[in-house]
Image (cartoon, rainbow, N blue to C red; front, side):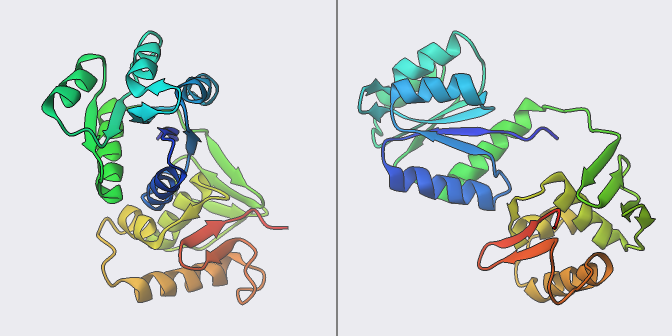
Length: 230
């Protein structure tokens, strides 16, 4: 699956930071921010985002202007964010090329789910490498075998699923919710003990010293990060 980059254009740092945190928690760790029309266009050219969250009222102009410029070059989804809640504002945003219109104040989680919905519609696919390698670990493309220093690891199906997710997202924080939903295919509600048990067992199989992990690192309050180790 393509790693999507989300461009957030908003001149309120608190809102941009909040959206980044929520998107990261929801499994979308690649975000860039801008606080003006000019900076937004620069980031669009440099980062090549898959989707843009765009505020309308910006210091050097309106988001509508940036939308028009982007539309001359790209069809990426553009989701407007604005305190303007009149129907005419929403219609204008959609008429000039916006794909969605979110009224402030909004639920950050709702924004994340709208982003996910638009990304699903894109249906991007990327050819996966034949072998995935992170530090001493190697996984085959079919995700059926993981080796450490060329020695096969005896992993259960769930442990294999966790390793696949970790190895596809090295050095990135993955929330417990994301891990559980992707590996178990269920909502996380109250499943903290289940996750901790599986992480502990996986550490026992892949770490040199499970009590001092170098690969599966706990990030307090956020989730886990997979590192290639020293």
